Structure formats: structure tokens, C-alpha cells
Length: 456
Ligand SMILES: [Zn+2]
Ligand SMILES: [Zn+2]
Image (cartoon, rainbow, N blue to C red):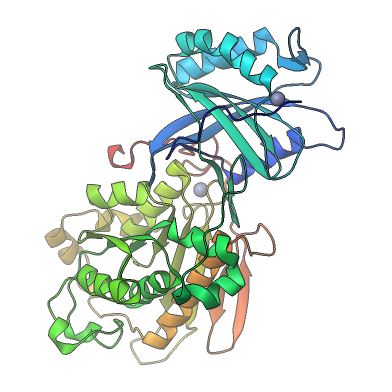
């Protein structure tokens, strides 16, 4: 087969495939039979940190010999009826139509001449029928190339296919050239490789909550070399925060926590790009920011923050890490089971609703205007204990998790959520439950629905 590139990659365009859908697709395409197999992906669209993202929502497998048959002009082709049915669904559900097949190979892949000829023959008509993006995708287990035809007749070549699982996989049509890491990151690059180190620089990461845990998370991300941070917190620092906010000084009382975090991030990396959002996560600007990033850290402990981040993970297929510390002290001063929780949220895995991590009553209160919230909370006025050393445990676990995911150093594809009990030294891995009827994380729910969180 002669392979050649369609067009140079169009900056920004990408396709994100949720891990469960990817696993079904892999089983279908990559078999031991040394043959080609086909499928169709229907995908929604959202804006991403670098440009438009297609979000794979439905997978329609083509049965060999029935839907995927000997072609008249090529080796194999999707049967006309199969294409028609899938295209009509794309039209009715207003989703992009992407025909997928596999090639043999490892880290390099491209369409064959025959593939491209069939795009030329078929896609203009499919584009008319659907009124949506139509295109093709060719895969090996380690590479992906695409050819997307937009309704306005522009043709784009996506730069990558992203699978946000335990490791964050980014498939491209060929291994990119490696940029040597700068001296500042030399010791890290000895672990991650220059390619891994470079991956941090491309990341846009949102930190929701810049208190005890978020302040440390921000510092660690900036020093790792993350290229862009969205810093989200509505609070200003008061005297009781000074013991826990990194590098805070007495003069900082009254300053927005976003500014303090930004100051630390710039000290760590003068070249870092920052967006400061001094709002709660439910503010439209904050929601837009978390819906258009590569990764979210949830370091705010309100139910509203949990809800909106949870919603974003599944609607927009963006992984998140929740990090927090619980220090139970009863009114008599009795100290209970202190625990540090770090939970990795993988799109399409059990969500925070499925795992009882959002309290509907508390969420309703969080959504009230500020003055009404105060009235509703009169019983909970006692501030919770908080200690920098415990917070640093949560922040360290959370950022280590992120770091291994980005550089594909997790030993497996599991979630790696855990509870840590510092008073006993116990560390218990957590497996999230998934309710197959969940409104948020099930296939029939909000998965890959994209736009827009603020509408609901
Ligand atoms: Zn092919
Ligand atoms: Zn769920």
C-alpha cells in the first residue's frame, strides 16, 4: 500500500475518544487476523485549548463481510446501506461522521491512494446529506491520521487523537520531532525524556480552588513546566490563610488568591502563560475555561465545584483530579480518621454522582445567592481544620498522578484514585463505581455532549 500525507496537519483540530469507546474500537480493529476492519464514529464538537475538538459520542461497528466488504475500487469498503444509515444518524443528531479503519504499522500511519480516492468520491455527497463534518480516520494501535471535510468545503487534517484514560494518550500520524529540554528542566527530562518534558509545555491546565491544596498544586505544575494555567478562585486571602498559602506574606491579606497563585507560578516559570479568573467555578467565564483545557485540578471543596467539574469531565471528555483533606474533629476536640483523598476522574468512568460524592442538598445551597447561602449555613459556621503538611500530601499525590498520566508512565490504565490515612499510614486504592443509568456519565447521559454546561 502506498501511503502519503493528505495535507500538513491543521493546527488545533483534534478528536477525543473516551477510553471505553476506544477499548471497544481497539478490540474491533486490532485483531490477530492481519486484516482491515471498519467502523463509524459519530462525534460532537467543542472548542478546545488549541482549536476545535471533535468528541466521539457513538461507535457503530461495521460487521466484516456484511457492512465491511470487498470494494469495487479498493481493498475493503463500508457497504452503501451502512454508510447511509450512519450518515442519516449523523444528520439527525447533528454529529460529525467519521469512517474509521485500521492499517498495519506502529507509530506512523497515513491514508493510501485508494483511501483518498474514495474520500474524493464519497465525502462531497455525504457532506451534503449530513450538513455536518464528514471524514475519515485511519489507525494503528499507536498512530492516527485523519481527513476531515467541513460543511464549508474546507478540508482539515487533525493534529492528534486524544484518549483520556489512566494515561493520557495522544496519537499522531508520525512521531513529532523532539525539542531538547532547557537546562531548568534537565533533571526532569532525565525521567520523562525530552518528548515527555515537552508534553507539559503543551498542556493547558485549570486549577479550581487556590487555597491550601490549590496553592501547592499551582506551584508544582508551574515548576514541572506546564505551559498554561487557568487559575480559578473567588476568594481573597485573610490572616487565617497565611499559614497555608505558599510564599504568602502578611502584606498579602486582602489580595485575591488568584494573584498570589499567579505570582508563585511566574516565579517558578517566567515564561508561563496564565489566565486569572477571580470567580466561583459556576461563573460562565470559569465554566468556559474548564471546558476548554486539557486537565482540571479540583481543589475546592464545595458541592457546586464538584458538580460543575464532574459535569465538564463527562460532557467535554476532559480528565480531572480531585484532591482534598478531611480532618474530622468533634465538638469535644476528639480527632477522628484524618484522610487525604485523591480521585482521578476519567471521562465515562463512574462519576461523582455515581460515587455519592455530591450531596444534592448541599449542592442546592451552594447554588443560592451568597446572602441566602449564609442564612442556610448558620449551623456550619465553625471553620474546618486545615494544615499545610496534610495539604501538601494531597497536592503531591494529585500532581504525581497527572505527571505520570501525561508522560504515559502509569503502569496500567486504571484510575489510580486513593485514600490515604496519615495517622495509620494506610493507603487504599479506590475503584469508582459506575451506575449504567447515570444521567451524567452513561452513554445515554451527557457523555461527549459538549456545549454548553451553562445551559443546564
Ligand atoms: Zn486504508
Ligand atoms: Zn455517573
